[in-house]
Every structure is written in C-alpha cells, then in structure tokens.
Image (cartoon, rainbow, N blue to C red; front, side):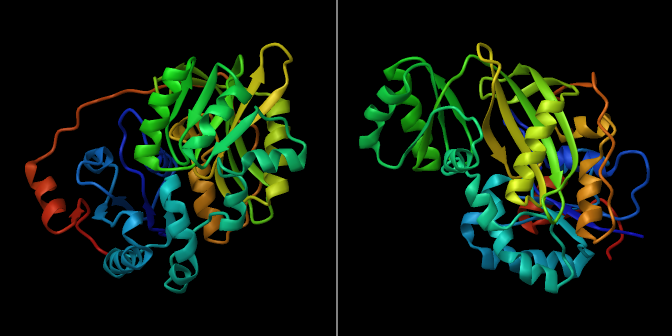
Length: 353
C-alpha cells in the first residue's frame, strides 16, 4: 500500500527540529512505497536541501498567521500530491493542527496526536499541577505571569535554578543578574509566562514514547544524554534499558490517555536517587532516528496507527546504541531556493498523486 506522509520541522541547526529524523526513519531500509512531503516554514530550512530526503516540498504559513491559511495551504497540497498522514513535529504548531484535525480528516488527511485538553495538562505552565495531583515527584516550580512575581519566585526556589520559555529555550541561572538577563531574553522572544524551576544535581534521562488511542505504551526508547549544547540539546546520547524509567513512562501515558508521540524528560537526583519528571514534550524528539537505530521505528508505528492498522507493542529497544549529531554543508542549485521563494514549492519527484 502506498502511503503519502507530510512532515513539518525541517530545520536542523543548533536547536534541531525533529522532522528530519522522522523522515529518515520513514525511509529507513525496509521499504517505503509512498511519497514524503516536506512542509517548510522558511526557504532555508536545512532539510529541504538534503538530497534524497523528500519527494516534494511546500512552503506553509507560520502558525501565528492563522489556522484558516494553513488549512487552505494543506488542502491545496493534498489536491496536488495527496496526503494520507500528516506528522507535526513542533510544539508551536500543535494547537493549530489539533484545531484543524476534524476538517483535515474529512479530506482524508489523518493525524495521530493527543487532544488539546490533554496537552494543556502537561504544558510547562500546568505540568507541576498534574504531577502534584498524580503524586509524581517533580522539581519545585513557579510560573511567572507578571514580572513583578520574579523576585519572590527566585527567593522561593533559590539558586541554582532553570528559566524556561513556554515553548522553547531553557537557561541555567546561578545569580540574580543571570536571572534578569535570561528572563528578559525569553520574555522578548516567547512572551509570558516564564517558568522557574529548581535545578537539581541530577542525571537526565529522556524517553521517546508512543501511546495508542487509550494511552497504552506501544513503544519507548530511554536514553542518557552524554553531550549537551549550551541550549541543553542532546549532541550525543546512548540508549539503555531501565525498568523504572519504562514504568514511569507507562504510568504517565496511561494517566493522561496519551495518543501519539511524546518525549518524557526525567531527572534522577544524585543524592536521593529519586526520579523527577521535568517535562513532557508533545511530539517526537530531535534524536528520534536513534530509536530507529535501536530497532524501534516509532515514526512508522505512528503512521500505522494513524491509518487504523492493528499495532502490537514493540519489543524492548537495543541498549548501548549511540548517536552523535553531525553538522554538514548541503549544496544545491540556487534555482531550488528561487522556486521556493517565488512559487512556494519544489518537486524532486516527477510524479504527483
């Protein structure tokens, strides 16, 4: 069966988006009969020019331009090349696609994502409330909705602490000057609220998970990050087997009735050895191709689930599989950039539909 999949999040810079790893997983040896359509927000999204990655590329409006315009564009693309499954991979676009999902489904475009009432529970603003209610350990957290609350929140949490934006960016702060600088930077870029969180002396573990329609854990790959960028992004990591991490992930997904992919971030306190839940990102992580290398092709699983296929939980992933992120120069004709800039589409494949 030929299945066409559209994927967002095609930029891989110092804060890489997950889309390229998702597409590499779909194209991983084992056969892929359909077309892969890249949905780009910027003509210089790097994955657009990665040779052999995409069949078609289309520019789409940014989420803040309104769901109406995104819908019109997606339906145009569907009429041109056909889309069976759409995989959004960015936090900032998820709300838009949640709103559009019923209408997209009417046009044969399937998504496999959680409902907005579920993602609201685990947003950085409300995650502490969810953990408190479900008796899940988490670091001390304050949500700053007004700059006047900042001083008291810092005194409450103490140093060191983490400052986080609602969607992206996190900074470790060791003094008041760093707090003020990073608070202003995040507020200017992402607006309020800003989250302050206790910075534990801890080791970080991440688990990429997929839940079915009822929140059952269908696949999960735990990793330990071995090298981080200054923005806290993994530049190297290794897979591992840890029954406690798996059980925490299984419990969290079931309590939420989570549907689709997510990344569960957990810290193990170096003193108490207690596991603390710090974030749940409602999409694939940028390191998703590591899961495929560890014998869990979770993007393909999501496509199968979206298509209504019967899917069985995957066997545990291989441990001791590593990734190291690699930057490279992509060379392309200027004509490619000109086409995306002028007509908003680029076709590597000569066939449509």
